[in-house]
Length: 472
Image (tube, rainbow, N blue to C red; front, side, top):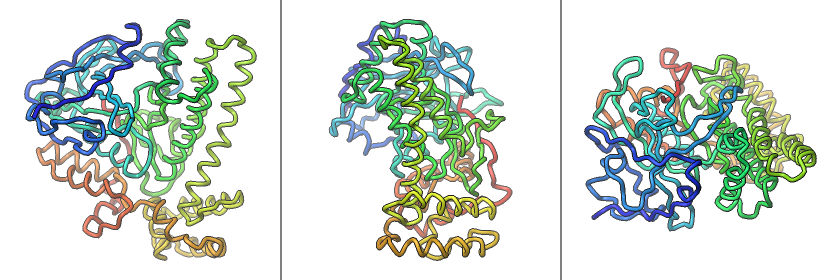
């Protein structure tokens, strides 16, 4: 059968100033590593047994109805504004409206140079492609809003970084690729017409009930507040929370130097380029508020009364801290078995996290072990857990389904960084079995899978991966 993608391209209908129309650059010898048949079915695709899948998702062949383009955006990178970024190694093929009624972008990453490449080669090597595929699908299985992965393809060409590495292309799926930086580029250019068109497009696409620019801001704030609380509840650290990596849809986007914590430490930083800890685990709530302030600033020019807009937008951004705390409390209360949290539960949760930090307790395994009575084994001094547990057990007397609540909130499996790195090493050597095994296990993160307990094990000292790197 021939692959059919029911394209319905709304972004490509915007004026040309929003993007550059460009086809992906073909590769030498595309070889399909993985294709997400379940996601393809949700998106309304047919003919997914087409032998040309590798060629299509490497960019060598364009499917009927595609409208390829590279998107324009700007962004604050580690707090410094860059007035023009854009898709330097990605091509948006188009959009589909799936059987579930959801509109989704289909984007190739690693598909060659664009006008926004800024001297780069526009390619990606195999490691970051497999990392993003695995971690984004794991996040989806964890219930965290995220971009998805549809396909990964070897290109048969080397990519040169510190040396020659095998090239690959990822097909990423998102409810859109609109970022805070997409608004910033037009605000910086004082292109009010384009900024208004973008805002109207974003409202129609994501938040149809939003009332104008302020309604859009409020909706994005609510989505991002909940997203960051979910990140923290699974021990996830994004690593590069730049405004160009902040999707207005409320989805996690861009899995470069990201990772999940092993031992709990609120100051954990994984990104090799985050030398000052701007995007450390504990700073993520503050940074998302900062990012929303940048979105608010970009939207102000659309308002008829600037002073009133600044006042109202400031109130909205400042209120975000309370929204995050509320979402955080709900998520973490569930992790300790509390389905109906009270304000005072924040102190109970905080004291557990402090004890975990002081006793080198693994984040995921400690919470997962709470219903079994084995959580104390994660502590260098188990009596620290015992002291905390006295108050916890008293609190659970009012929670008749505490164990059920905990099991639903605490995964057994996350993409542990050392296992991801080991998987990448194997794939570079030509062995994709570890990748496929991890993908299968991580698709059911809340299930006990005794045969996969090695994937839940914390790293040995020699296995610790202290830093992760951007995939460029």
